[in-house]
Image (cartoon, rainbow over all chains, first blue to last red; front, side):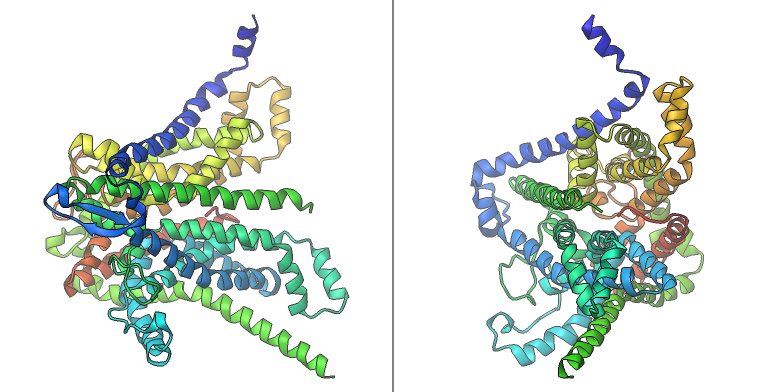
Length: 312
Length: 277
C-alpha cells in the first residue's frame, strides 16, 4: 500500500521530465566513462609519465612511440594565467564604470557590446588574432621588450614569429573578459544604494568609496577569476591558431607552445596512423575534463557561499 | 592643503584609469568588426553572388552555409525538446536534491570545454559509423546547446509570478497542465528568445565540429550520414593554409559569419534585459 502511494506521487509531469533529466545525467557520466576507458591504455603503458614528461615521439614503429604532454599542460596554465592578468583589470574597471559612472544610455551600449563579445564565434577571434593581433603584438610589444629588457632571462630570446604563449594569453584575455565581468558586474550591482550613500556622507571621494565597495564584492571577483580561468583553459580553435603549436616548456612568454586543447585539435586527426597516440590524447582530454570540473565547481562554490552570506 | 591635493589627484587619476580600461575592454570588438569588414568586403565584392551560392572551386562558400544551417537545425531538433524538459524540471523542483544537482550540472556543462564534446561524439558516433557525418556534428552541437536552452527556459519560467500557479492549482488543474499549458505559454517570449540566442551561439562553434562534421566544400551535402561543412570549420581550415588566396576566402567567410551572427544576435539581445553567458 505504501509503495502504491509513493508511486501515485509520480504524476504525468514527472513521466514527461524525468527521462530528459536522466538522459542528461547519463550523457555526462557516459562522457567521463569514455574518457577514462580510452585513456587507460596510455596509463598502463607509460604511467604518470603521460602527464609529467615532455616528449612527443610519434613513430611508425609502435615500440619507439612515447608521449608526454607536460608541454601542453604548462602551456594551458601559462596562457590562462596571462589571460587572467589581461582580463581582471579590464573587467573590474568595466564593472565599476558601468554600475557607478556610465550615463544610462552608454551603460546600455556597453552591456550589449559585452554580451556580443561573449557570444561572438570564437573562430572570428581566431582569424583576427592570427592575422592582426600576432603581428601587432610582435611589432609593438615583443620586439621593444626584447630590445630594451633582454637582460631579464625570460626575455633573452629573440621573438621569432610572434605566435607564442603571450599572444595566446592576450587573445584569451580579450575573449574571457565579458565572462569575468558578467560575474563581477552582477555582484557589484547588488551592493545596496545605502552603502554608497553612507560612504559619500562621510565625505569620501569616489576613489575612496569605490575602494570600500570593491572590497565588498571580493568573493565574486575570486569566483569570476576561477570561472574565467575555466573558460580560458578550455578554449580551442582561437588558441590553436595563435599559440604556435610547438612542444616547449619555457618561461619565455614570447616562445611558441601548445595547450591541451590545441594539442587535441591539431593531433587527433592524424593520431589513428599511430598505435598509442589516440589513447594519450584521451588522457589529455581527461586531464582537461577533471581540471575543468574542479575549477567550475570551485567557482560556483565561492559564489554560492558569498550569495548565502550576504543579506541584502 | 597638501593632503587635499593628493586626494584630488588620486580621484581624477582613478576616474581616468577606469574610463580608459572600460574603453579598452570593448575596443577589440570594434576593431574585430572593422578588420573583418575591411578584409572581407573585397573578396565578397569581387566574387559577387557566387560567393554565397558557389562551391569552393567556384570561389564560393555555399556548401558551408548550407552545412551550418543543417547542423543548427538538427542540433535544435535533437537538443531543444530534451533541454526544454530539463529546464522545466529544474524550474519545478528548485529545492529537491535532483533539482539542485540538475542546476549544478547545467552550470558545469555550460563551462565545459567544447573540444571534449567533439572528441566524445567522435568516439561514440564517428568511429562506429566509420565516417564523419552531419548527424554526428549535429549531435555534438546539441550537447552544447542543451544547457543554454535549459537555463533560459528555467529562468524565463521563474519570472512568472507564483500567483498564476496558485490560481491554476486552486481550480484543480494538474501540475503537468499548469506547467506546460499555463506557465510555459506565459513565459513564451523569454523562452523563445533564449532558444534563438542559444542556437545563434552554437551555430558559430568550431571545436566540436573538428572531428565530427568532417567538412564538405566542393559539392552540396545530400545526406545526413555523409560529411558536411560549416562556415567556422571552413575558416579554421583556410586560415591554416599558407596561400594568400585561401586567406582572402577566410576573411570573406568570416564576414558572412559575422553578419549572420550580428543580424541574429543584436535584435534578440535588444528584446531581453539580460543574457546568460
